[in-house]
Length: 101
Image 1 (cartoon, rainbow, N blue to C red):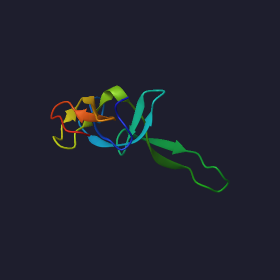
Image 2 (image 1 turned 90 degrees about the vertical axis):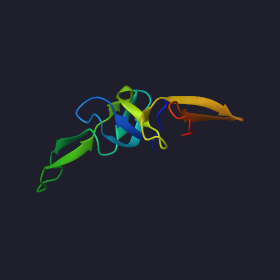
Image 3 (image 1 turned 60 degrees about the vertical axis):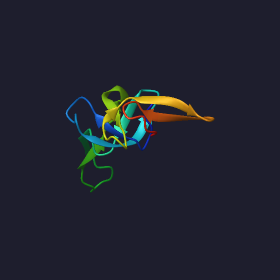
Image 4 (image 1 turned 180 degrees about the vertical axis):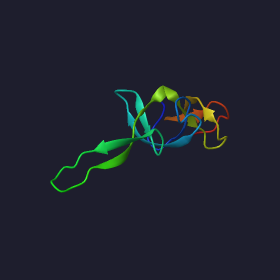
């Protein structure tokens, strides 16, 4: 997966399409990412102890990684990621403008 935790991404499909946010977590096994403040759902939580009230909690659900695109820091567009070697280091770069990520 070419997307890492902390990257800024733009959502391509679904109810939040066109919005962008920062990645909170990446699940490599299931190919999913969680984006901060996006794809938020309300979950009803039952009371745990006697006398405690139930509540409604907002939960960020993961999105399939193919439905998000990385946003370049210099050209501010949704991009595809390329890799190149600079010396002994393998770096990611923007395929549109060529700048390193």
